[in-house]
Amino acid sequence: TMNRDRLLTDAKARALALAEHYRPPEFEAMRLPGATARVAMDMAIKSFRLAGKATAHDEVVALALAGVLSGGDTDITEALSEEEMLALERDAFLPLVKTTQTLDRLEHMLETGKPLRN
Image 1 (spheres, rainbow, N blue to C red):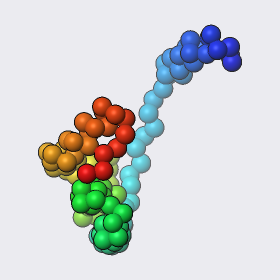
Image 2: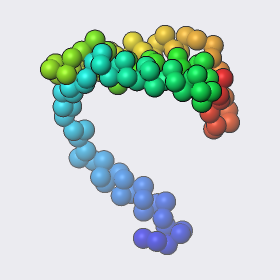
Image 3: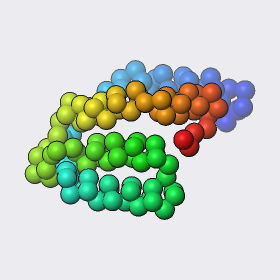
């Protein structure tokens, strides 16, 4: 319904009805490029930093993300499972969350809803 008084109630009822039989899709193994893509992303990240478009911590975060997106030490001929992808994410995230800069960013986002460029 487009009745403003019923919109939220109807949307909630529809979401609950859809969720009743929902099953997440099966994870499909991923083939990621590995070191070649990592090197290309590293170069791009460093050029952003040198051009002043990224802060020092932006670079740290982006390099960690590049490691995940490239597949780490994988090769395009190898398929990565969901567990391997989650391990890559975890191995990149845990060291980041131990830094004061990342914690400052998380706290600032939670308090203000805006990103902190530190």
